[in-house]
Amino acid sequence: MGDLRYADPVVDDFRDLCRLADADTHQAPGPTPGGVMNMDWHGAWLSVIHHPLFGIAITLGAYQLAMAVYERTRWLFLQPVLVSMVVVISVVLFCDLEYTEYRKSTEILSTLLGPATVALAVPLYLNMRRIRQLFWPVLTTLVVGGVFATGLCVGFGVLFGADHMILMTMAPKSVTSPIAMLVAEQIGGVAALAAVFVLITGVFGAIFGPGLLSLAGVDNPAARGMALGLTAHAVGTSVALQEGEESGAFAALAMSLMGVATALFLPLAMSLAI
Image (cartoon, rainbow, N blue to C red; front, side):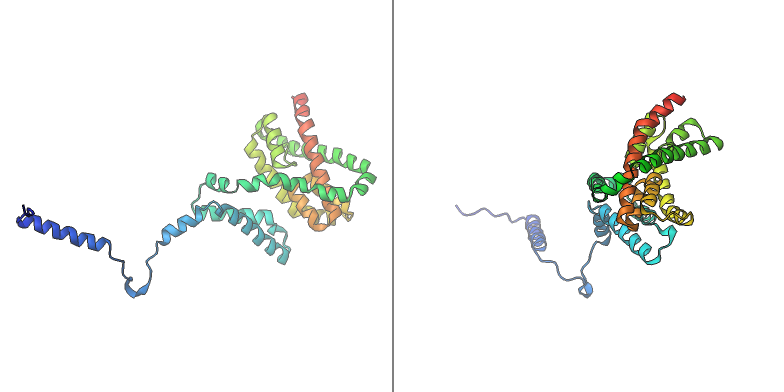
């Protein structure tokens, strides 16, 4: 028996259309007019700004740019922390990135804060003999400076009519952010707002601190480092390290001791005062 074939013209036309469609799908695409490749620029832009390394890139790039500008100009108001913060915020807003996405992409930098803080022990170790010689002056400066910095802040807050929550948030402003946030929450403040006050304190201390110390005639590296570390914590310590190894060592010591003293005694003092 021979093969059965349909002589229906409709079926034949359908088969012809299927053959043409199959040939089109297997045909290689030809060049675009003018020989220019058609690229999805919007998709490429989105893939860049949503890349996991984009947050780290703009953070480190902004800080390096701010450092270069500050080294060239030496203007007080161009402190690298302040300038890089403004640049990063501007880029995040321009790219319409969510803060949670930026925060997630820069988690490794937060993780490296621990080793970076531990690395401050290097100048401490190198200047340990000098620190031992000045043990009592260091202790006296810590007590007087810590009480004065905290008391002055709270006193001005009371003078201007700040409520209890704001006062408790501002009280630990002179220590690093993790300690300040923890202490502020313990004594009735707002942890997130405490981090803002800490940042403002550090930036203002780095901007005006060295100039005020020079104006007051304070030229001793140890004294300058203690003052910057006590009042401007990590930002002040970075400025002190730029001035010299001894100044940076005493700033790191002051920042560490101020953090421990604030975490231990500020909640106790506030509970007794209330």
